[in-house]
Structure formats: C-alpha cells, structure tokens
Image 1 (cartoon, rainbow, N blue to C red):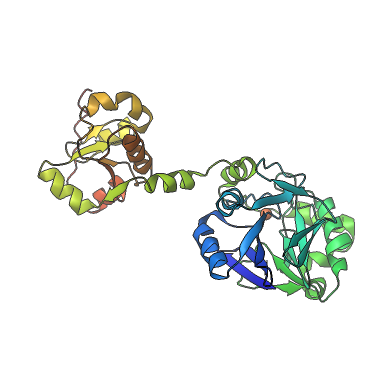
Image 2: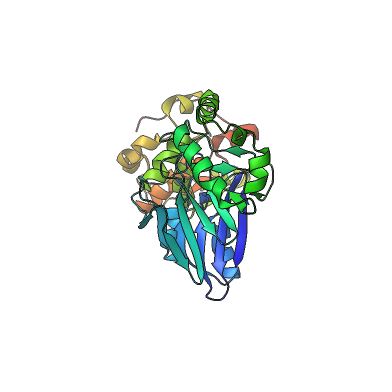
Length: 346
Ligand SMILES: [Fe+2]
C-alpha cells in the first residue's frame, strides 16, 4: 500500500494507493497544494479514482472539486454533506474499492454532521473527529458534542488499541498516533461519562477560524475563493515592477490607471495616473482609455485587485494591459514620486 501524508501548515491530507493496480484516493486536499498533489500522484505513478472529504471544512479551502475535475476523479462525501459537487455520497458501513484496497467508511458525526472516518487495513483516517491529544471542536455549524461522544466512544475507540490514527489536523508536527495511546493519554477521552464530555466540549471557548464564512461558502457550494479568482486572473496577464513602470512613465510610453476608490486616489497616487474605481471599470473605460492598443499599467493598493482589473481589460480588448507588481503600497514604500491632484473629469 502506498501511503503518503501531505502537510500544509497544520492541515494534513493523504494519498493512499494500491501499488499493484496503481489506483489511489486523495483525502482532504487543500486548495493551495493542488500542484503538489498533481506532481505527487504523477511521480508515484498513481491514478486517483476518488477525492474524499472527511467532512465539510470550515478552516481551510478544499481542493476536492477542482481536483475531481483535473484528475477526472469522483468526489466522495458523506450523504449529509451540503456540497453539490460531491458525485458519490456514502454512508456508514460502506466501502470504496481502490485497486485491491478496501476503504471502509464510518460515519463519525460530532465535529460536523457529515464527518466520516476511513479505515484502511491497519489505520484509520479520523478527519477532525479524533485528533492527536484532542478532538475536533463541536461549536461550528452542524457540530454536536453528543454525537461526537457516540462517534468516539461508540465507534472509533472500538477499532482496537493497535489501530493507527491519522487525523486531518496536527499543529505539532506529529504524524500519527494509535487508538491505544489516545485512550491512555488524550485528555478529552478521559471524560468517559457522556454528560461530563458534553459539558467539557460546550465549555471550550475557542476562537473562530480565520476565513470561516469564506471557507464554508466555497466548500459547501463549490464556488471560488478570492485567492482563486486572483490566481486565475494572474495567469491571464503579465506584471511590471516598480522601476520599470517609473522609467517607462517618465519616457511617456506607458499609461497608468489607478483602480482604487476615489478617496484613496485623492490621498495620493502615481503622477499622471488616470482613475477608474474597479467597480466602474467596464462602464467608464472607453471614455478614460479610448485607445485599446495603448500600453497601460493598472494598479490598486496591494496588487491583488489590479490583477482582476488588468485581466478584465485584456478580455475587453486592452491586450497590452499589465498590473503593477506590489501595487501602490510598494510604490509608496519605495518613496517613488506621488501626487495628490484630483482625478481629471472623465
Ligand atoms: Fe474540520
């Protein structure tokens, strides 16, 4: 059996494959590691048949939908998952066939209602149900401490002490644990009384994850993250650095377009920059930039929104639109000249 743990910060994903048949599953892939999964599966000579999500993640962006498309693989989630892009919905007691491997699904709700654990030979992927020295939290949408108690004490701990446990998160660089070790040392599992366990979980006062609403929006709907939109736009355009822009503006061979809001422009901008707030770009661009063959550099505050704006301009026929690498912030920090003149009426 091929078994690879892929770490992205504290998030863990897994590639599990059958060596004989070159068939694999990818579990809990992370959006910012897509190229790594593609490189890894190709390097290991594996064909990914299933991309499996142990649950709907609230703390990071899932790559399941995109990898399902890129790898021509089925996206597998529990039947209670809200995600419309899950193409195979599974439930407790069912198995996925991966070459000669059997991956058995245990429904282990509690952290979320759609949480499941995956048993494969001597190991179990526990998602966020059971962590090393901890458990998943139960205060996020569809969480339920009572259900978590049943999943832990009624299901996972019954897998036998020797069973290896591979969680979806670990922030201390540990790879795995065993059911036996967790039974002995996991502080939350020492609360074997249901009421005590539930009270402990309800009493945790945890900070909400960063990007909670964006993660739930994209992971539950299959929609795109802001970083994804900017990443896709950045592939459609090219960028120009500060020095290059300054020289070329001085030589008069480059138009500069500021796409920030009006007050930001008024407070300071690159000399002679024209101004169209991003929200009005499509409507006003023909007036402000009548020549679509002009060479134009677009900038915003940090170099993100200008990427989207430059890609939009290219779509509209401004084929020489580029974005300023680093945005106005980098320009200002480099102490390049700025001016505060109001925008010319367009
Ligand atoms: Fe989670």
